[in-house]
Image (cartoon, rainbow, N blue to C red):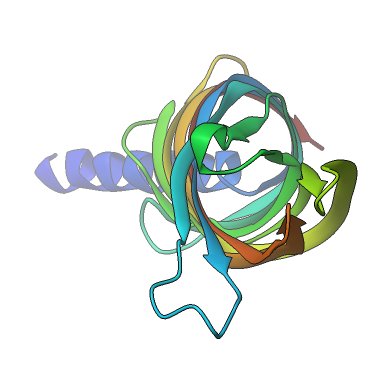
Length: 230
C-alpha cells in the first residue's frame, strides 16, 4: 500500500512537471506601456587651442515621458522550474531633453531618444504554476536626435545644427509575469539602459568653437500583456 501511494505521488509530480514545462515553452507576442526617465550628461568643450583655460560648458538634462512597446519572443523550459529565451522589443519614447545656455552663450540644444529596439536574452524561474520571475540582458539600438540652434559670427546669425544617429548600448532589466489564462500573461518590468558617451555636433557660438558630447542613462517601468502562440 505504501509503495502504491509513493508511486502515485511520484507520477503526479512528474505530470505536474511536464505540464509546467509545457506552459513555459512557447512563442509569444507582447504589448506594454509605461514611464521612463533618461539622463543626458552634456559636455560642450571649447575648441580654441590658444586659450589656456577653456570655458567648457557642462549640463545635465532629462528626457521624461511615456513609453509604448511591442515585442516578439520565445521561452523554452530548461531543468526543473528554470527557463530561458530571447525577445526583440521595439519601443516608442516621448519627450525631449532641452538645454538652454543662458548667460554661458546664446544657443539651445534639444537631444532625445525617439525610439529604441532591445535584443535580450531572457532567463528565468517559475515561482509557481502561474507566476514567473525573469531577467533581461542584451543590446539596445536607439535613434538619437539632436537639434541645436546657435547664433554665430559677429552678426549673431541663427544657425541650425541637426543630426540623427543610431547608437548602441547595454540593456538590462528584471520582471515578473503571471498567467491569467493558458495563452495570456500579464507582466511588469523595470529596465535600465546605458548608451555610454556619444558625440554631438561641432558648432560655433558667436566666434567661439565648441564640440558637443553626451552620456545617456535610461530607466523605465513597464506593464503589459503577452499572448502565447500555439
